[in-house]
Length: 464
Ligand code: ADP
Image 1: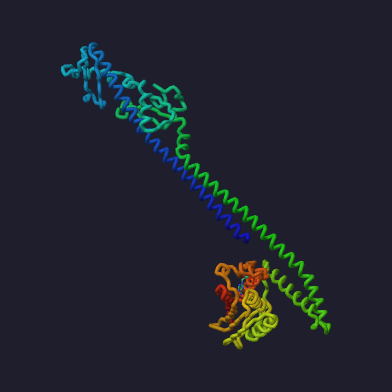
Image 2: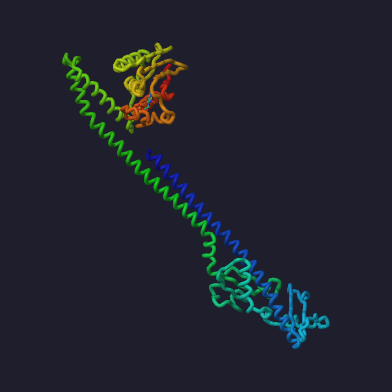
């Protein structure tokens, strides 16, 4: 992997990771805000109910109290569903325990007495039985399903405390949960009921704790995967660099002894007995083979692409010589060759002869290497079509699977079948061939059927 690709992957992964973490944070934050809003709505509704219950209960208690004063011999029970005085019903219980509605009683005077008493009271808070507040709040909180410790106070002009719960301090005065005790009353609008929940924040976080837990958990897994991926990518990169360096070094180290061997062989060739000496000829063949392999490995571990020395070449003549040399070198194999050259006489290609020959030789070598038939058939077809020179080399070998076909032109790739049949190779032949064809402005492709054979097609533009 190139440094550029690595940096790009790193940047993309970092952006994705930052995005995911930011989204999770926004999501959690949003959930807390929704919870807070819901909580706030519940609290304000509860406070409205608390104040209205307080009003009702206070009036009921006062009326009861007034009726007691009115007639010592009667016990009065007051029931009211509204603070409106008109709806008060008065029952009396006589001393003989019989229940009777006191229709004869002067209710108007009772009520007017109460109203006068309420209205003439200087301190508006006197209208309320504030000691009822604690139980009313407990009930309302239960109604709204809020089981949080709270502090409350009734304050006048923002901060003068008239009545408060035990733990209420000046800190609790900052609470936003405050409701006017006399919302309808224009003159007494400066009296507030304040509720404060010291553990509110913890409660809110706890209410989205599942969400926070899973968000953090999955984000951690993503971060961990990210770190592991980077770690293994770096490790892989380092390994691949070491491998390439090693191959480069070893082939460079081999170059000198191979060159010396070839010089020695060419000196030996002056000896007239050379042609009869099979051992010397074997040494020459293997020396040449070693030389080809090492130079291909060096060429393939490109940082350095091969530099072509191109010239105009009569392609028909070039192919004929190439094929006849190759056929001779494979004379020990049972190969049936077929050539079919159409309309290529006089056609010139602008190519580097040495590299082009090596590229085609690779395909021919493979056509024999990967063939388990007793009679190997190789057909070579050359033609020119619409200013394009087309060369097709077809064999009746083992064929290439679809999966392998996608990778055979990759550096160091060896097909599974190649290994099974114990055919020697480095996996750089077709990589090299493809590179050479492309440097000539051409294209190479492959068609194949398992057990039937393979066809390699080369297309090179013809100079006109
Ligand atoms: P090598 O021959 O050293 O393995 P190549 O790059 O020349 O490397 O070929 C890559 C792979 O492509 C081979 O390992 C083999 O599996 C497959 N292959 C190439 N040519 C043929 C062919 N004519 N028939 C079947 N398989 C082939």
